Amino acid sequence: MAAEEKKLETQKLADFLEFVEGWRDTWNVGERAVYRGHTDFNWILMAKLFRNPHVQPENRKGDDPSKVEEQLLTEHLNMKEAHNLEHRLFHDFSRYLYAYRPDLICIVPEDEKSNTRAMLEWRQLSIGQHYGLPTRFLDFTTNVLVALFFAVEEPVMRRKTKKGHFEEQDSAVWCIEVPNRLKVWQVWKKDNIWLSPLEFAEEGSAPPIANFVDTAFVPEHIDERIRAQGSVFMCEPRGKKYDLQLHVRLRDKVRIEAEKKDTKTLKIRIPKEARESLREQLDLVGINRATLFPDLGSAARYLAWAVHQRKRPYAR
Image (tube, rainbow, N blue to C red; front, side, top):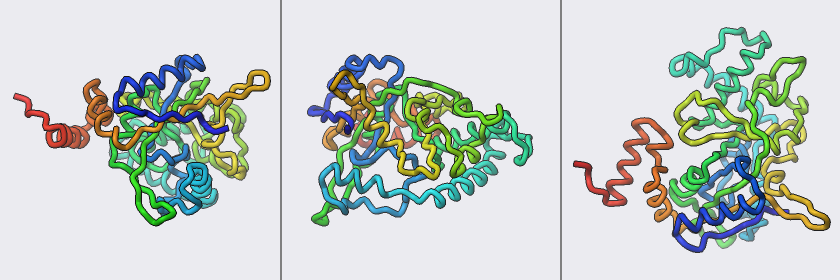
């Protein structure tokens, strides 16, 4: 059963929030709700590590949404290539941390297993995720306005239809219930030792996949971006059973009552025409690039947008 889909028919932030509040009330999700925004409505919930960067945005199987999703589900790196990539990225990124985050460097030798080393390596991976490193993390937020910002902030995505035309795409915000919140390294132990990220990723290591459908991993506030964005992660434990994809399991989450099945996941379509208006409304409530990416580069990018696009007067 696919996720429930609703389309925002106006450009009002209040109407978007009404959709979200209705979903929260229907399922009584409370604090268990997490959200994710995509600039392309067609995108699926797949961690960046497994995405094939060379795939072109073309609807080769057809323009029907189910055909596009079917195609996207096949557009991932094979597991051996993904795991090799993960090892290289992780080790190289760890070297860069010596200059920028010496507090995250572990003095425990690499060949020595310890809870301390495993914990620090998961923290390193959390930092890498927030700075664009391809990881097996899928980033969600506890703040639906943050998710909406990521859906509307970047330029509109374009996909090539079966007729050969590139068409601009709507955006999307996913609303998902995730009951459990844990520190990422607490999910699975082996012989009372927490697994490091690369041990966790080994093919055939058989982590309990069921745990990862209902568990969000809460990173500590070891970076301002993590705090500002209200980040929580889900993790794709792909091993030999690569067909068990996180996207499908989250999309198809249901509650069964008697003979009836109801989906528990909501996907809100944001029309491309509404993006700029929603971005301005988000800015009015303090959700913008400067607040979510607290550094000088992001502040400059935000001000360029605020002054030139919104014709905002200079401060006096």
